[in-house]
Image 1 (tube, rainbow, N blue to C red):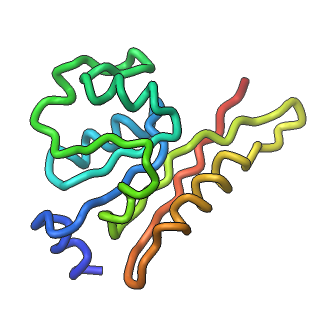
Image 2 (image 1 turned 90 degrees about the horizontal axis):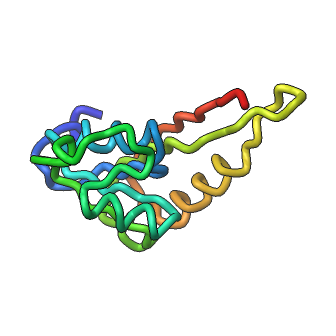
Amino acid sequence: MLEKYTELKDKHTAIAVIGLGYVGLPLALAFAKKLKVIGFDINAERVEKMRNHIDPSNELSKEEFNDCDIQFSSDIQALKASTFYVIAVPTPIDDSNLPDLKPLLAATKTVGSTLKKGDSSMNFPLFSIS
């Protein structure tokens, strides 16, 4: 794992953050202050806003995008430049307090389609109460 950290720190590879909502976007920007990041979201309109330093959730200021080494994309192919993946997608809770895992399963499938030997990933399912 130390080798993976060194590759990320030296920007020989990128970390991908899948899901750029109210948790994923700030996480991606925090990583991008020190590392090369690919911020991925399936919503192309949201991605375009982020490219223009606009947070679609209205939580972050334009300045928080400054000095970040980040590429925003809704193209799955962009993820192939990464070797470490963080999944930060919502898992909303229904009336029976059961999580809807469809977003997590879809994100996992997306990452799985780009994984290469030696890649790593972390899942951060986000539960929300409606």
